[in-house]
Image 1: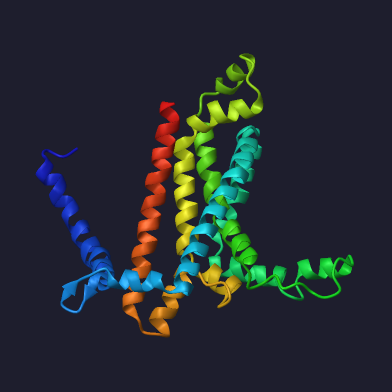
Image 2: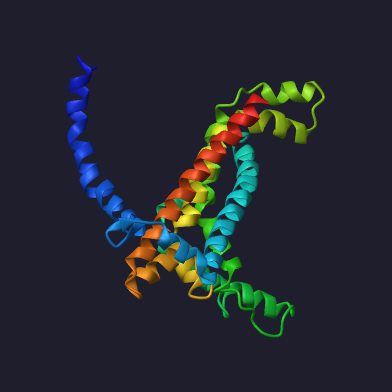
Length: 275
């Protein structure tokens, strides 16, 4: 397409400069705040951050909820994707449209809808009290369960779509061949489907895990101040405490966790494929 490499680089240079000035440079400046101690460089800000019990609790909660949402999304995603892939073309298109539809709705609206469902006068509590399972409404909002449900509903479509794409690219005769050779359904999934769809799982897992770590609206609305996550804690450090050093530490932790999740998923998929 281009006569030489220099011509291609020259065309890409304006976009690279724009991305560097508008995105990379501000992020680098923010992240550098966590490594400064006066005029020198130090990791004291990270030591101070993890020395506080609240920060360690928030970090572990964020990491645990991210893993839980990703794991449950993978289980539900495989079941849903496998069912959708085996539908007729017309039904498959409708189901993919239904899965894509929530992605077109603002996360704010989707999150606030859970208040109507999980509130003290919400649908769930009305059903519980109506069936006589509890004399009083249960506290469902501002709990880890509410945050988990909200994050799962928010990012599950991304996992399903990634796995649908991976399953459609899988050889059509792979499963019948495994069944003919005597493999049960667990062996078919573990030794055939999982290795052949690992790329879709890596993409979906990265999107879900990273999204669960960095989502702000859902933890803030459904968790409030009682269920702090790293992203809500970072907002508090900036807007309330005006502590940009702690915010820089949290931002760096979130970036490292996101990249580490992607690298780990890729290595696990590669190791599984080699075996």
